Length: 567
Length: 56
Image (cartoon, rainbow over all chains, first blue to last red; front, top):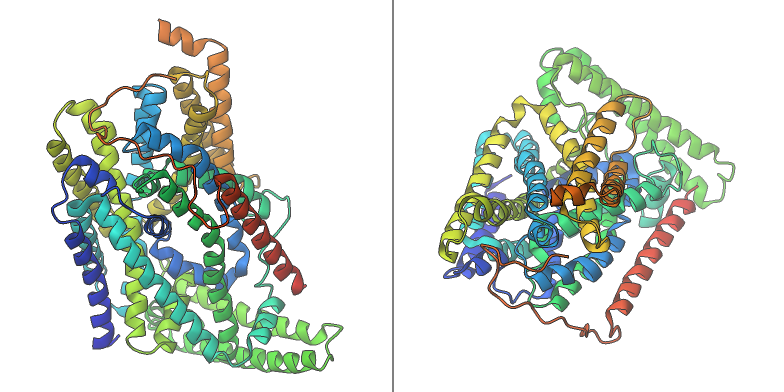
């Protein structure tokens, strides 16, 4: 990165944050702080919902995932349009009619205080524990690549997001997200155009090469529940995950309940329902096309060059040999691909023999890459061997002009800040509305709650900063937090579905139903983990949700809830 | 369902108008918008299936 890149990077980041603060100056009142001006249109809501979901990892890791595994990850998003239709038709009108600040207030109004606290508690536990990851994950990649001090990168981005989120509240989050997502779109579009312009073969041939390596297998109709991404796991497990995330997670609910009207909020959700799959497809396709590009332009044997160089310092001869063998193998693959493309064009490869040679040559390269990963790990047992997160950033640095590099790095930071800001705002409002004003300080004025909300938002920001700064000491903890977070969603959704659709079930029954369902999901997850029966985590959303509904209905029908209420 | 209770921190604003009209040129009702989104989704899955099968 040169001076121009840094100017673009800091100008974009600081400019958007400053604009967000300026736009929300003089804003007062709890409603204004937590919900915004009440004038937000559908386009802003739509972009804000999109920016909240799309963290920096979406733009750093997903192209790498496309590079390594192809388009299959797209199935994870298949349930999103259906989930958003249900939310727009059922959840949203209810939230707006009750005029709530948080989704969990609705649980309190429908059931009772303990169920509200359970919903809010599960949200705070899940989001609070993972609060540092959205800052840490991109910071570790960017600081490794650019040689920036990791702590400084975390502190700079963390303080910036705390500043404008705590001061400006929900309105500042929404305003900044709109421009942040525009920077992201612009950066990704430029990267795609440059990639296509630098591709040595035409788009049709590029797709053919990707197809030969099975990178275009977007859908898998297999009913094997052990496969991570299939149409069915995406549709059924994914439906619960998406319903829970968009319908009950305060970081999303806060985005769309702030709309000027029900119509604006609904259109914002429908905008996402229409755009998310094509958007995710384009990001994955970018990764697939990078894979094709690197069949003609020799890639590094290990994309995390910082780790590679550090490991190579221990045994340079061994690493040099691996690099040489990899270069020769890549050269052979490239020649076979060109020969196959010519054969294909002339109809000379109908039996697929030349294609098989291409695949065999590539497999040889992949074997050498596997050796490279082992060599890195042998040199440092703590080194990460998955270099997928470094694929896109490597391409950016090597192929994009200066200025655009700064814009792409700004796009990564914009994605990190936009999702982090929504999380902090949601954590702050849930703590204020569902915990503090409910349990600690009942009946205080608006000004007091605005002040409290600012402090709670800042507090969660510093918790996130602290977690991110010490995350490198606990890599496994991060993974555990991510997984545990995913097993909460089903039960929370169950609570809301009972609230919306099973009118005769009351608070005590649903409370204990949810507690039992959560215990079941935990015992299944930890019981099946690392066994041959381990199932894709997406299914836990369906299991948790179904169990919560079933247990609640059974407890209510058995009269246990009634007895508890009565006695 | 329990009656609504005022709670500390609850908004003092009146709920927004429940717009029956979508304001869109062709899709005038919400069910037609949802149907449109659903059909677009089915089309996406169909196109992705064709893409998958195009390179056997």
